Image 1 (cartoon, helix red, strand yellow):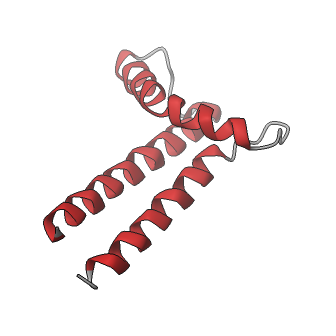
Image 2 (cartoon, helix red, strand yellow; image 1 turned 90 degrees about the horizontal axis):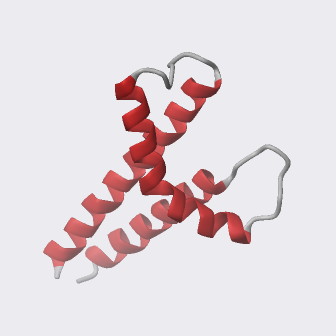
Length: 94
């Protein structure tokens, strides 16, 4: 059981880094630091969008409209951190 929880913690950590990369890349694109005309940047951006947009769209359904602000990644960070705390607390009680 401990091994499964450790694998789940590792998957949560990978998900955290993927969401963080998406947030940072969205800022870089918004401030014209990177250009979507470059093939590698476009492939990376579209891959991250295809991976995370289903998650974000479900969360956006619950959140109220906030103008131009998107709090979906923040909610995903909170959920991942909460899962990590729950698993870590249960990991050491087994």
